[in-house]
Length: 215
Image (cartoon, rainbow, N blue to C red; front, side, top):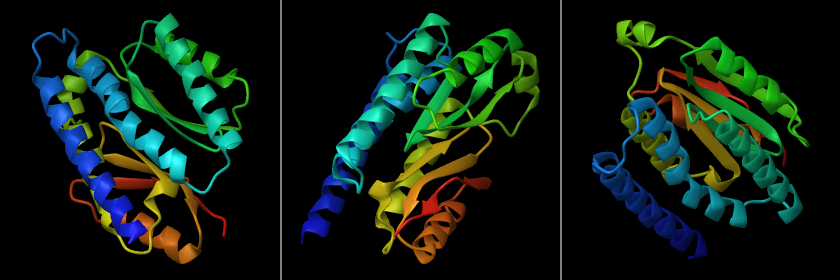
């Protein structure tokens, strides 16, 4: 019964997140470029679910606190560089960075400073440099609102998959339709099922797996 209540609560939360997303994306008061708005909204809208999941997942409070501190430090670097073109995800101090930077200098400065963040164990860097002109020529690049929709689809599939403890996994999506899976599976069977669930989600083009098995 507890498992059913947890899944029901999370389902309600996801519906609220999607409604919030639609409202924020449509709000005329948000004067942000599509890429900046998308990156910021993605992190904002995932925050409630992330906080709830971290509260009930199979990890110590101290380890979760370390992750939260690293994310805060990375967000501070973004603020200093006046950029929100990168998105982050983290699990056990293993940090994933995705996004598209319009200039090499900002990209390099950001990466250099992120590498110096205290407590970081691993850095999975998938941010790229691409000019606005190059992006316009690429028909395969998703708009940020489409990235948000795809992330929601993946989350829904993970929550509804039996045998997958979705609270122990993290997913992130980039503008190229690649989904990154992080976290911990209790068995190889569970990990294989999680990867397969993500891969079979509509519109996912590729899965990069950083999740691991730890009973």
